[in-house]
Length: 124
Image (cartoon, rainbow, N blue to C red; front, side, top):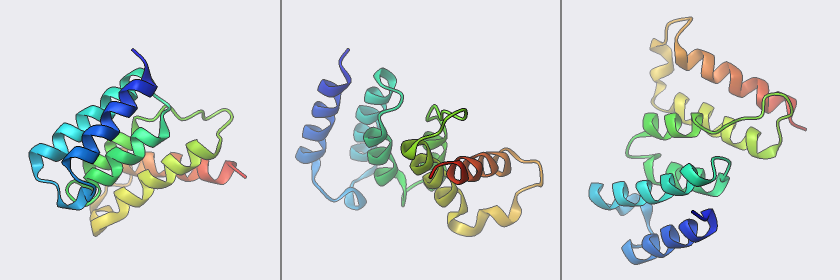
């Protein structure tokens, strides 16, 4: 189970389906998301795979995109730029659509955003 090979297969699949991820039909989007999630299952800190999933889901289902980004194993003890980038994407996607106005003070989304903001503040 090699992450590099799986990423290569996912990229070839993306190329065959078409380059514009915003124009994908649901079945194509699901196929690509599964291919990139397969990469993530082998290499949980593969930022490129998370980025590709985010690109595909960002306009179709930003909540799912944020949930996928939130699965990234952030190194809270010593965060790096990858941790900060992924954290920033979680915040951006959760804030999309103004659903945040309905969050309860102690909801899971508020906690996720708070953690993400702390990670971004720690990385220099």
